[in-house]
Length: 212
Image (cartoon, rainbow, N blue to C red; front, side):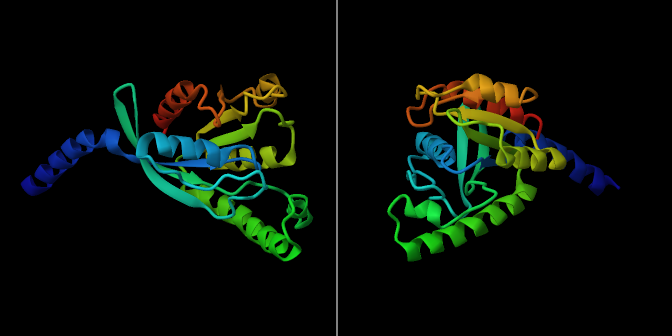
């Protein structure tokens, strides 16, 4: 009995010490070319000096789930995040979409197949997420099947969500449309390309982490 009490005591002590060091799985989801990898790269580079993936104007450049552990420090607090960058979610992926970017037909078919598998993989990874950042292109219409599908899956799993309105550096950016489409969620305006407003992003992520 004494041994059990002793063990429980140390369990409580060590849990208290390492509570702030808990590793949190942070997933980046959204449609293709919204800026998921650009944002993940900037965060990883800021805190590790290394990027997580390759960025390209060609859609579905990220076709496999990629991850990297990053300790993020904000206002004196540190949290270890397992950053998970996922392929862009799409309801339909056609190899002809790649031909528009002068990709050869054989390579286009290969990319389309890999991108389709990547979408399936991304959805499966939702079961391992502690919280999710949905990255949206603020120059695009947010009212589409892809965004509704992503939100629906997250709501069903009760995963905390932060919506990021990216590409605010562009003239066509329209934050109000995103706010109108998702009034029940916190929305942070950023430019991953120029690192604009990342302070608010980190503050929102740390705040959301308390719900994990």
